[in-house]
Amino acid sequence: MNKLLPTVLLLSGTASALHAADGVSPSPYHLTELFGLPITNSILTTWVISIVLILAIRLSVGTPKLIPSKGQAVIESLIDGLRDLLVPIVGKKAFPLAFPLLIGLFLFIVIHNWSGLIPGVGVFGHIEHGHFTYWMRPASADLNATLGMALVSMIAWFVISLKVAGPKFFAWELFGNKADKKETPKVIYILLAPIFFMVGIIEIVSIAFRPVSLSFRLFGNVFGGENLLTSMTGMAPYIVPIPFYFYEVLVGVVQALIFTLLVAIYIGLMTNHDEEAH
Image 1 (cartoon, rainbow, N blue to C red):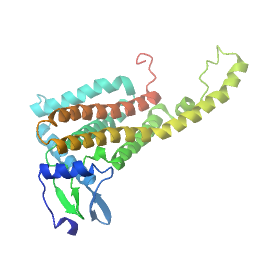
Image 2 (cartoon, helix red, strand yellow):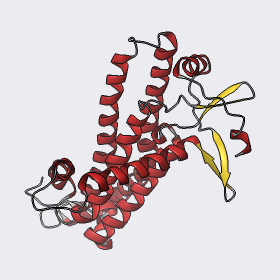
Image 3 (cartoon, helix red, strand yellow):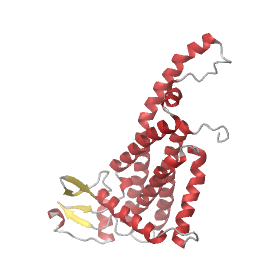
Image 4 (cartoon, rainbow, N blue to C red):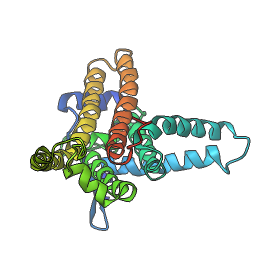
């Protein structure tokens, strides 16, 4: 905390000028340590937003009622909308297990995507060695956070797929012979087995790269948006950046939805084999 004592609070004009000159750092800034663990500005933002989100939902919903309050109605509408979107993708069997993960990912990502637009985020901080270190940074603009979410999502995908589809179907879906044994000549059926096995090996490689694609896609879009806003604000602090703020609001929703839907599709590929759903 000693580093934070000689603190200089900078208003948006000065901070924006420094940011425009230096650009947004691709890595988070180290602020302090807690029990020997580093605390970065993206971790601090995660804690603040998580606390605010929990309190906002608790205060707006309170005790659920048969006749919902306005806050409860908003939350229920969001849940109903995501449920109608996700049930056909993951299937009815996997939905009870997958929905808490998916709605948590969507809300967490969209709020962090928008957090960079909140006044004070990326503005207040301190100067250290002639460099401005701001205290808060959207977690989705930190590759560590997006990679962590992607790894958690893939672990959940593996657990949900095994629990719903079963180990036998899981292995068959990856390496099994997909040809119809009744309609395919025996010789051809046997020759197809090693081909499908090799396809399974390729699929394993593809699955291993899923966390990379998920994390870099989200990080790249949000980090790029942070740089765009920083550049526009640095060149013209007033009026000019306003359209870009609205653009980033849209990008924040789209990127959160893409991340959530991709995880849902990965789960559905293993768990949703209902003919009506297809």
